[in-house]
Figure 1 (cartoon, rainbow, N blue to C red):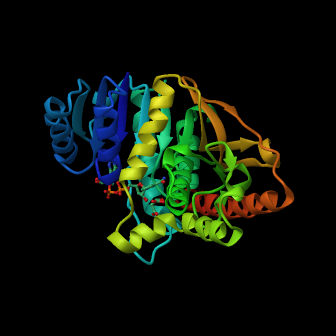
Figure 2: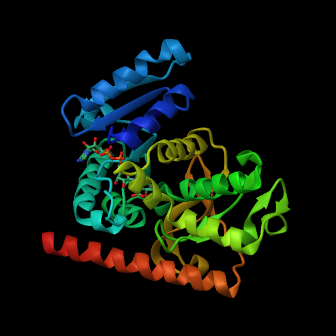
Length: 313
Ligand SMILES: NC(=O)c1ccc[n+]([C@@H]2O[C@H](COP(=O)([O-])OP(=O)(O)OC[C@H]3O[C@@H](n4cnc5c(N)ncnc54)[C@H](O)[C@@H]3O)[C@@H](O)[C@H]2O)c1
Ligand SMILES: O=C(O)C[C@H](O)C(=O)O
């Protein structure tokens, strides 16, 4: 299995490293626009192989997509991260240009690839990659839900003083302030979370989760990478090993949840064909309302992208 990761910065290099040391792919190609940068990162990861004992070959290239040819999965992390005081949506005009040109190159050299978008604003960059690639929606998806759910699970594990391994949760909607954590679908070792934690504390955790990316941007001056890079690698693993994992993933909705033509995080089954199935939960009225708010926000940013593209055309 061959996996390309575009963008050898914080998230891309972390993702490549996880793919390598966990031997999720046989070959990982890292691509960056900065001269020598991807080559350096790939060499560093390869030099770790004798220490951490793995065989995955890592190759770095500067903007040379011929080396990515025949990739089974491509992860797009190229683009600016936000700085303190910015929203993810502030990145739209710069990152749309980058994601669209990268997608053209990917599809030219790997027409059968499955594409996982990580660049922000996530839902709209998934839209950008999808319309540029012209691939079926099952093969172009965005990573955010695994990360947002992991933050929620990590905060819950801390509050309950239990292993994060035992916390199962699902979260829906856009990757931003309007994301929709679902306490009704959160369990701790099979026990509904609401039996273990008070409403006020749970609400505080939900709010912290919604602001999870911003909390890290404030602390570090740039956005997160360990959890995001690992989350993207987990999606790659589900695909290349045909694991049929159930994850929240950003995908174009075509009637599911009563939503058409908007890219939102929903629970899916992820396997060798990409999105094998979209799972439709029976949401209650409050949850439906939250999802509708999220849909409205993502739709607005999608329209902003349409305007940017129309102005360029
Ligand atoms: N979806 C998520 O949950 C999530 C999580 C974290 C970060 N992100 C997003 O991922 C993106 C990357 O974040 P980062 O922290 O790795 O940033 P970074 O600045 O460390 O790395 C980005 C890399 O992209 C490269 N790049 C820029 N234009 C390129 C092009 N045309 N072709 C190839 N490479 C190009 C840059 O040279 C840089 O090395 C940001 O947009 C960030 O907001 C998303
Ligand atoms: O917060 C960001 O800008 C990066 C990413 O979307 C995250 O949630 O960590």
